[in-house]
Image 1 (cartoon, rainbow, N blue to C red):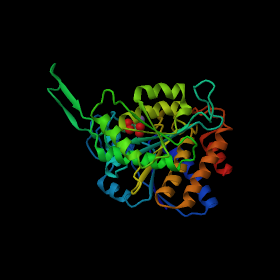
Image 2: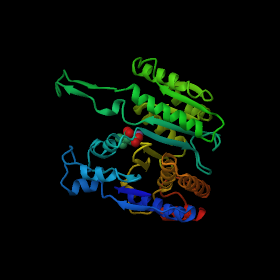
Image 3: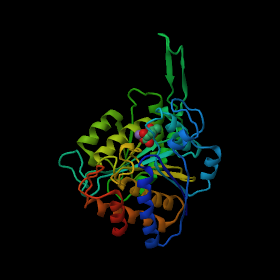
Image 4: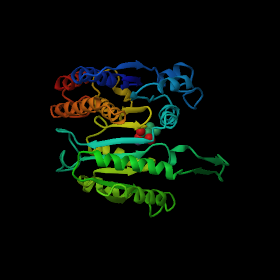
Amino acid sequence: MKIAVIGGDGTGPEVVAEGLKVLKAVAAKAGFDYTTTDFNVSGERYLAAGGNPAAPSIPVISDQEIAQLRSYDAIYLGAVGHPKIAPGILEKGLLLRLRFELDQYINLRPVRLYPGVETPLAGRGPKDIDFVVVRENTEGIYTGMGGVQYKGTPQEVSTQVNCTTRFGAERAIRYAFDLTRRRNSKKKRLTLVHKTNVLTFAGDTWFRAFGEVGKEYPEIEKDYNHVDACCMWFIKNPEHYDVIVTDNLFGDIITDLAAMIQGGLGVAAGGNINPKGVSMYEPMGGSAPKYTGQNVINPIAAIAAVGMLLRETGQDKGQPKLVDAGNKVEAAVMATTAKMKSQAAGRMGYSTTQVGDLVASAL
Ligand code: IPM
Ligand code: MN
């Protein structure tokens, strides 16, 4: 397996180093070969190359680098974000660009409360919080369609188009049904989350696609929530959920809420997935500049992202050994969180590198 590694900015390289430590340990254990190649892509490099911190001026990642990434089996990303660079430049220039160009049409976010991890939901434990959000990742309001007219005048008009296609909704829905089918859960329930009471055009495209594709999955319970109600149920009855499928923006918002109920950004991992192409796995937290170089940041999310990388790559490429390796990493993560004092940076009871060692030895 060939893995491209983008450590990125701030604490990104530190958490990625722990993920790679665990990868090395699990490869020896599960018996697979891999290579890693570092890609120097970051906000820091953008600035060093003369990029304008206030407006996009030079590419954050070059066409040539994107072409190279296409030849890998997976990408492992730490964090890209720089306090001196205006919002939008790195997000559009790297993350969204890779999602669109590599057609990573699924954003997969497992939401699982690991043993010993504190949730803000009173009286809730690991058996209550265990679901997966499948977020459509290439459409919706993220396409950048729209524009601004009469800018800077009292007549300013801006439009931001929600681009929903039947094709895009359907492939996300199908992926979610397949995932519900193979997931090791007794619920076998797929919840569509949208806002069909107001978004009567886009919502209806999703709703009809869900109903029609759903006929191919008779054993799966079809469930629907409006997105606002879904936020309410995440807090009140998180145990209801098994798998959720939703559009890009709703998925962005509910997965941050979900990250909090699973114990915060120190533990939440995600994947930008093209099941037939090159997928990218990452911890959900940012570059956390203030903790850089102190060996205090939590690497659990980055290590869990390695587990996802192995499991999903194995799943998509039909390699059971990798699926098994991914499951082993998750089990080792769960053995480790149970020993940690907290999932917050600097309060774990261990340093960043010690947490990586604990996971590696739990393997
Ligand atoms: C995420 C992030 C991104 C998003 C940002 C950084 C563009 O919040 O992966 O959820 O909105 O999708
Ligand atoms: Mn987000």
